Length: 237
Image 1 (tube, rainbow, N blue to C red):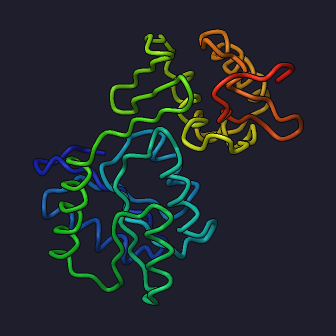
Image 2 (image 1 turned 90 degrees about the vertical axis):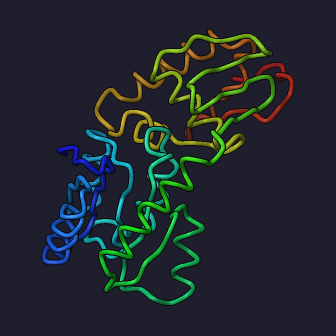
């Protein structure tokens, strides 16, 4: 994406090519940098390549429901701070509530004027700019997603980037089992042959760096979870 004078980068995820063209042209004319894709798969690739400031997300995508993609973007460590505005023809209140509860920052119904859309983009970014940086604390471990720093029992822990992202993915939902493929998608943005071995190596490395290795639990046949226990139990895997 080419950075424009406006400085705000927008990813349009819309399978109606005529509408996508109109949005891209109109936003470009207002100084936004715009890229556009027509499927959820292409959106994942785009997000893994160049992180935009805001995603304009259609709900009726051909390969994945937009609400599911919204939830995936918000859950991923790499994209959790991206602004999301749902742009859709679904006008029922329950649809709007569902989208907002799944992680969208705003929700507009087609057709939407470009002046209004531009104002909504800027408003979402203002709210996110002044939102408190997310800090997660589970047991003795505290992780700051803004500074990408980790404290264990008050002592700093040096982690490699993938280790940090993996720890954050687990700590966002302590006590919840995350499958191996889910973690690969969140941290590496893809699943590939041999990926599970890569994940195991990173889990082992994380455990070695934490004062309580058993905080990262293996759930046989399912995946991993970050324990909500304050002290490790004997015999934990």
